[in-house]
Image (tube, rainbow, N blue to C red; front, side, top):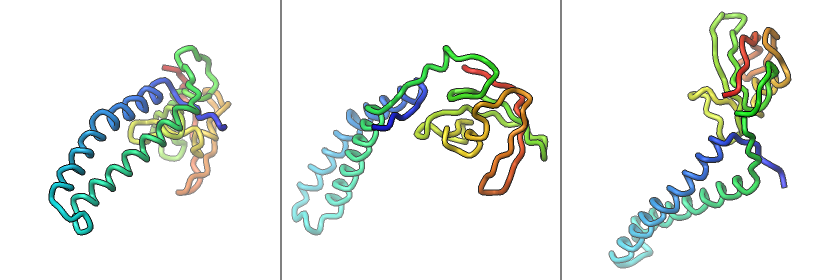
Length: 157
């Protein structure tokens, strides 16, 4: 069984989502199914079929999250330090072509959200950064073409 690396924050977020799906969404969907059943003939009842679809999606999502949690390898980044990039690192980079600075935290696949500055450990940028140090230049092959970054700082927060 393959372990899934994740931060403590990502682990907590998954627990919170499961709790929400089970304690809020599941009862809401059950109520919607009961109301739709009260309308009579189920074969032509769009509300009933929509509610059953929601129920199937909700239960599949709960099962998916519980599976990931059971295989989670929570990595406590608060105990990590150093100037070498590894899982959990927050890395400040500068694009060597545009001089634009970006900051990314390297997290597990299911925690990744580029809009929040979190990139997946399996992304091309993260794979290029792992093992590098402050001052190193990295070449990254992205879907948009090659990019060159310089590592300005590495921290673990």
